[in-house]
Length: 470
Image (cartoon, rainbow, N blue to C red; front, side, top):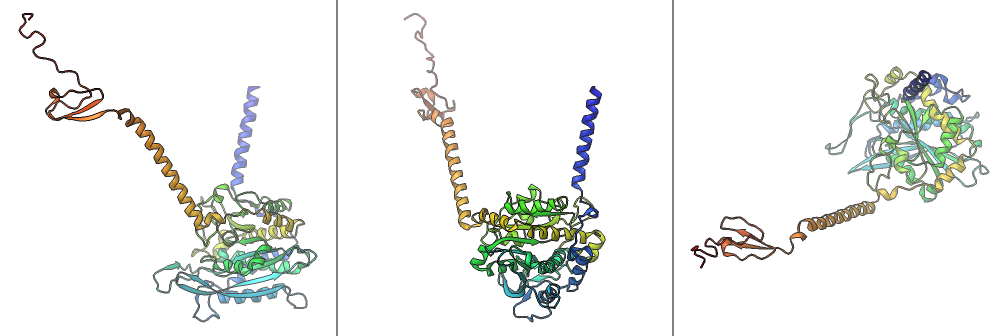
């Protein structure tokens, strides 16, 4: 009997170990749920990415006083606007939805850079969206292709990689373009208005996202119930981050993913990645550092959904524990050749992001879940207010003061109060000439040392110096 019990326990431990090791590995994309969305097929996404990467230099760091056309981000923005018009036209060639190229000047220190966002907007039928709710699904499209320095040349904003940026952030752009196509063909089924935002200057402060958010105006921001960002896709795992605590919209999206068969392909990030240091600044709202991107940074007071990939860290495209699988995003290796060589099934992987988000948006109850999340949204803005910083500093100072006072009292009680009634005197000519009293402490300059109430000096003559009894 004992052997049977031991065997059962050993089998259970072996099974647990196997499950643990299996869970650590990347999911197999051979068993992806079948989809009838042609726009999200591996072939469609692969071709979309290849076409976009023709515009290799997408830094967007163009000085305001330099020519605009045919340089950096402008070339990419023109391509995106034309491609959106092509993908979203109806059978008669008429445009569905609205495409805007919004120009802006982004400032960093004393430098000004010209840039633009490309925004494609779809409106849900009025009867489907009586509240006028809006969501934004976005991705920055610029790249770190060339080195960008300050005007005086003393500061390097980022070093050029010379790579077209297949992972950062071309794959996300390809997904977003194909989502534009699918949503345009199914706009009548929407229950919320949707903006597809291609942000400029994402590599340098996410300024394009900030410009979009501020451009909504107060009334527009009140109607924005979800901000989704795609960034650094293609990794071994796909993470969807919503908040450091449970949210209605997060539970809804993850529930839809599980229901549609994508539960093994997406997950919320490990707790260690959602518990970073808090940077106190007026410009950057509170956000988990490991998942920082446009939505987490500039939409912190709205519902957010950050979609990114990696393994033990979202900064790693591939498994960081493997010697031959290193991070490639925003490096000189961030090319289509590298992506195809190191991750042959990348198109299947990025299609998961499109499928999950699309399933969620078109699922019954999506608008209600987002609205509920917006009403109960937890604002972390107070953590980044300068007044909060001063309050924290004051609280720390007060705590230090209280600690000092308590320790001072304790030390005083232990080392001072027990000697408070004692008097320190100096025996200039030695203790023979002093008449000590109880509690006196003498410093004997004559060399016998200080002592507390020393004994009476012995009379050398005694009571009978002559010994005759007289």
